[in-house]
Length: 204
Length: 123
Image (cartoon, rainbow over all chains, first blue to last red; front, side, top):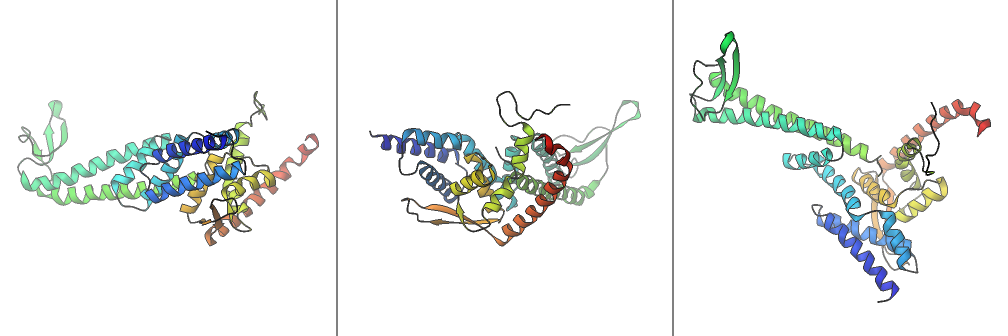
């Protein structure tokens, strides 16, 4: 194998590794990234494609995994900003959480709020199926205290408890539950947009 | 308090790194001001014109981000080198952004320059 062949093999191996780590990105975009970097490496190598020159070009680009990570994060954030899909938004938040503490707290807050919204909306739906047990209950505790508990209808009504909302749990659950869900979605969208904008200024 | 200009390994200190990072977007947009340019050309311009040595693995994702933000466009052009090159050009929004950033930068550097005038004799 000649020096030039070995150099080209190294370039192919690097780009193949990059391509593998770009999984999750749109095929067309991943192809474009690989093509651009191939062009860059060849430009850098110039007329004499040799092993030291290629090694130096690949070293300057950094590990393929890290480079792919940069592209993937941007791609995910950009798609999350253009979508209403909570799944894609959550995936972006997970990615952001892996990069910074701010992202971690936003992810945590979002999960809690999504879960609360889902539980309230689900309680509204279940009220129709188990009208006797589903609802927001006030349960007397020792010492004259009361505990508020949201029951989903999978157990008997709490002894001595009083249901607070009755059928109002349906509009309440739907409005507050869906409201929380969409508000969190909007906030996530906004914060992802800000994070994405700030990344334009960020370098590794 | 002493802020060392260089650390033991002669690497730029954190402040200098942050300063370079902060102006990278402006530098890339400015290097596209006069027309379309491909990635390696941008890197060379940054290095020769402004002595801004940037990691190659930084510039390409940054260009993709700028494109996603609508500040630049790109097109593949066949070259004499035997392989196509991806050229970038500023969009209208990119030109406005570059101008806005250049204005802020000019104001900022002028005001800091005034402050450091007494230090200039020591440089």
